[in-house]
Length: 123
Image 1 (cartoon, rainbow, N blue to C red):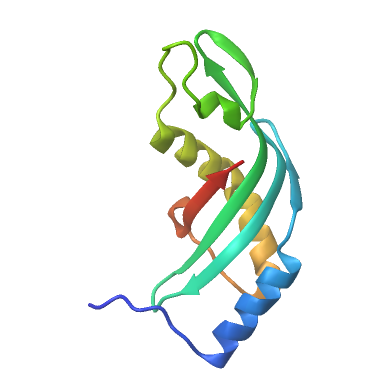
Image 2: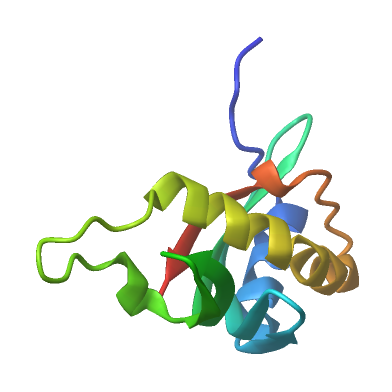
């Protein structure tokens, strides 16, 4: 089965609406707080994909200390190791899933799993 993005006029109009009204949505829960922006939307025959940009903080336990961390957590300081980018992105995807899914329902876009948030950029 080939995997091609569907390019119809409905999909193009939905993409324009998401870019227009998908900017800076506030999110605050037990694990994440900040703003997210939906940057891109793609429709395939079996699922939909979105790209999200997240500006904010996450609450994680790092080096025995549970605290709120921003994107500077991902930089290497004083020769110490930084956390896995894959695990941090998965954590952000899972905790933003409900808010992104709820916001996309306004545009009749259905996200099924957190893997449908294809790309996440943490600022």
